[in-house]
Image (cartoon, rainbow, N blue to C red; front, side, top):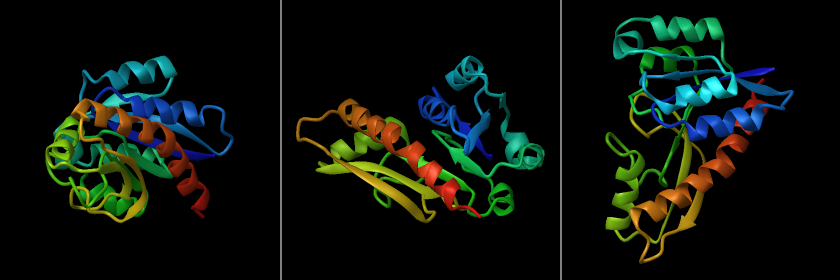
Length: 190
């Protein structure tokens, strides 16, 4: 059985979707949810879904090996960033090569980089009069949103769409595609 660890910073809708998607699977399961925000709604979701969850601070992630040691003890087959807002540390990326992925709410390389998350991305898409946007699932490397692209899905942006309209379209793409791509990556692992 493949083991998934999710990192999230906010409400955790993608985390919940992944937990539910794999809840009846005999191939993989979400074994832990980790967050950098002790008040994140993802912790409530994890409790309701009966998934182990912990919060940590910046020191534990970037200045010590505490989070790395926790991951090594958990031994995940895939680490999934689902709305995790901090830059992911190289020590973890190096220990889990090609096993850390992220979902980004735009078609990278457009609208990526530091500060480009959530509504910031959707507002930029609307302000730039884009006619399409989408999601990008990619490997995580040492730079924000620059890892190799695994999958993209697109949607139209109408001239009268608000950032909220775009956010809803992106949410639907994430709910539909993210679990399937995670599953496919796990199936392809040796």
